[in-house]
Length: 98
Length: 93
Image 1 (cartoon, rainbow over the protein chains, first blue to last red):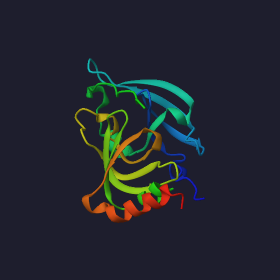
Image 2 (cartoon, each protein chain N blue to C red):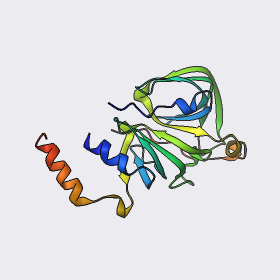
Image 3 (cartoon, rainbow over the protein chains, first blue to last red):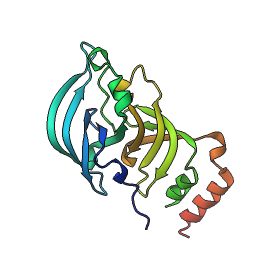
C-alpha cells in the first residue's frame, strides 16, 4: 500500500491552515500524522471581516485535529510580507458542509 | 483504488479543485494519496477578490474529505478506459 503524500516538506515552515469552520490559522508546522492531525507552534488566527482589516489573534502552540482541516498551504514569506493585512477586507470563509 | 490510480495519471496536469466551502483553487496537480488528499503547485484561488485568504499561498495540501469537485483538463480523461475500469471494479475484479 502506498503511503500518504504527507506534509514532511513543510515541517518547520510557516503554514496557513484553513479549518472546516472557516478559520484561518497561521503557524510553524511542528508535526503531523496520517490523519492530518497537525501541531502548530507560534500560531495565530487571522480573522477576516468586512468592517475592519484582518485581526490577528495570538494562539501559541496548537494542535488541530485532522477531521477539522480543509487546506494546508505553504506560506510564501515574501508574498505574505507584501500583503497589507490591516487594509484587507473580506467575508470570513464559509464552513464546510459535507 | 480506481480513482486513486486515475488521479495518479493526472499528476502534472492543471486542475481546479472546488471545496465544500465553495472555495475553488486552480493549480498543477503535484500528488494524490489513497485518501484522495491532493497537493497542488503554483495555486491561485479562482475568485481572489472574494477569497483573499490564500493570497500568500502557492503550494497547498487539500484534504480529500473536503473536495467537492475536481475539474479536469478536457484531454485528461479517456472515457473508454475509465468505463472499462469502472465496470471491472464493479464486478469485483
